[in-house]
Length: 167
Image (tube, rainbow, N blue to C red):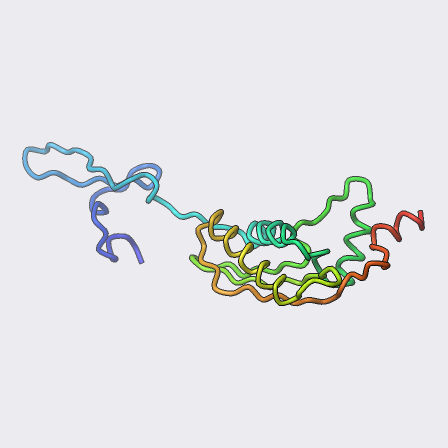
């Protein structure tokens, strides 16, 4: 639907470069331009799923008790990728976002440290992720699902430690 069909003011008249439109003033052939409103309101901002996933991943990792993000397989592949020259740590590992026009929903896979309250960690992850995503993107976070896939025991080696010994 066009702006004119939606009844938005300032959309009548000939079209100009960059999508600006003018209103024709009545009488004497005197034409002038009328502002369309504040510049911030002209156009759309779209936010990619990956952007929201990175923000959520970093926010979740900031919570005490979160040892790692992702399922076992994705963490293993991630550890190998981190060792490859030129490879980077994926901050969005373990995060899946569905982003709409004004809302987003997130699924997170986490590994918690042994001895922490899983319920408290999941609540803190939700709160931190919602605050960060809403503050940085302006999107309404409608849902944050947290799946705890593993517990890091004190005597377990990390995938990173295993990779170093195998070299």
